[in-house]
Length: 470
Image (cartoon, rainbow, N blue to C red; front, side, top):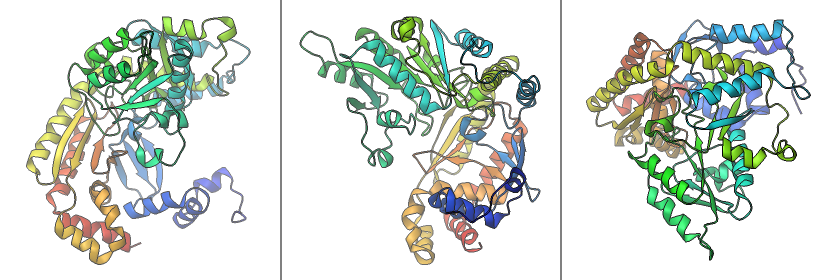
């Protein structure tokens, strides 16, 4: 049952703060509403956004150092992206292209084959990163046949929240709630020999293992974990030796985020299938995709009778594909991959300086390109005592959300928006757009410096004060 009100577009655009909180709590997700309230984000109303800034209804200007969790590689509302989408609308272009061959799908697939290395050639475009993972797994299964259905994944991994994607992700707090796929085997991230061991342990009498697929992030984006040098090359050798399809998940890290077009290129390997999304859509299109090597695709789906085994209602939408075409061209025209490497070197060096300066708070600084994070130590004893005194029921949350205290202080005191590692809540992450200017990086770094200069007791006091004041 709803509140009896029917909303038009102009109504939605003018919802007041109290009503927005109410509607979110009653019709979207009460737990999410509570989390936003705890961080003090529940009374911030974003009116518009452009480039690296979000403009609030009260006139405040927020520096967005999240890049939409790597979705906004080109920033908010890039003018060329807006122009491309406006052109599609004004020309009344055919959007649903099911009975005709789409020029936008064809051109986008050709561009992907152009920027990807080796014989990565055939692409399928879908709507989300998790959907691209699902499609890649299906293709690999079809390629391998029913005798090689085992899937190996790593203990530091996140590939999505659909059933198959979750089955090969190491998010135990959510995995434990569901019945997931059988035949999925977890090994330590960064240990190539662990892959060989699991493959050999699954070898049958005729000498062939039933392991058919290994799914890997070249950089674990949500926790900022990097494998040792040489790991990717050794993984590629093992997959070749045992006829295993290597799927690279570049959803988080693709399109220049780490200073390479794709993170796996840091070691010069070519996966059999690569999945991607986020920056691919230019910050406006809900689009993802996966591209396969010619041999893999042709054996799986190359025959006419197999060509439609995998499809999707909204795959290949013309405006989404046109947006992605323009996004790739913006990256190329502005040399944003190289720019990410250069600006990332500056950002990383400055963050490491802060890590050394506040070594009692900062456990580690790590990153590459324009993807960097500071992992923090847990709250100090005085800060914990304050929480126990004022809000004892919140102590378990605070213990896991040390990063949230810093996050809130950055936003409320310095108008800087960062985010927390998806599964590591003491990890404060900066992943701004690839177009960010150095002066904006300096602004974020100066704000972080001022926040870290305060002791945990003061930061927690401010955090609790923000909660109690609402």
